[in-house]
Length: 129
Image (cartoon, rainbow, N blue to C red; front, top):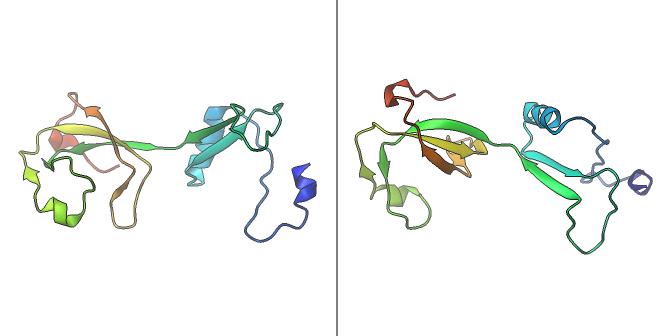
């Protein structure tokens, strides 16, 4: 039905073909294409105009890596260069596991989330993956 409505869509609208496969398989392919994730709908569900439905789910692709903790700032909002002047530097001994969506073009983490400390890894063994 949607394909019939979009026979000649404008340039900024693209109809994707239906994809079938396991969640893990589709997420692997999406990651290979550099996508941020997938939005999926149960095949037999109906579109319900004007309201959210449990028929749609979003799967976000994230990366994870360990980082050496070299300092911290007090929790006062964003971490811009001005705030970094007030950083409390520490001996680089602790390793943290961080989940994030991507590295930006200027080597910053996009949407980082602290997952916890790694007690199984020494700071000297951490490398950028």
